[in-house]
Length: 289
Image (cartoon, rainbow, N blue to C red):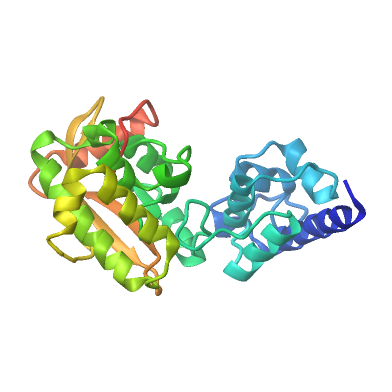
């Protein structure tokens, strides 16, 4: 490690400690406990929230750890409720490029994250305007599958929908045409809201037009409409078809959305979602956003 990197890593450790000290356990859904010695979070609690080992996180705070990955930085930013500026600073200290807004490593809007964590009994997740999943609560993983492993173009569910047949297994086949049309109209609305020279969205559209005849035909129809609320039938491997309402809350710039799923009225979906909480996470087919 060179001298400049050593200085950055020392500052990274100090910055993590300062942000940890300001977070109260109740802010992240943890009990305060009668014997807590520090007002903020303990190191082991931050490690748990970020999905890191306690030893690894301790090394980061000491400024002696290895260079954290972009995924770990994003997880730490979520755990510590960092603002966008604080998150960018953390990437700088770690010697990593700051992610492009709307991409798979985008910083989750703190307000979205706070709302997500206040919905423990409802499947919910935060996605970008290009349908890249940024964070899911446990019930969303149980219902829709774990989206955390996708990288590059495949991180977008819209990309997978039109390029990977397996991505469609979570919907009954009778619903595929409707979902395709809705995804394309939503993507056109998102592209219009972004800068016309936005490389991420223009590259995605060009790729899909070249590789999917279905996408190209729908794109040529020029339909445009954001997906603000939806009624969906989701195929779950253990529960069968679960009919839900998918509701959306948009961030101010439209780049992120909080989605949450409620049981559709006049169905047995309420009982199925209650059962989902008992079943927990298991192998689930690829899911939609």
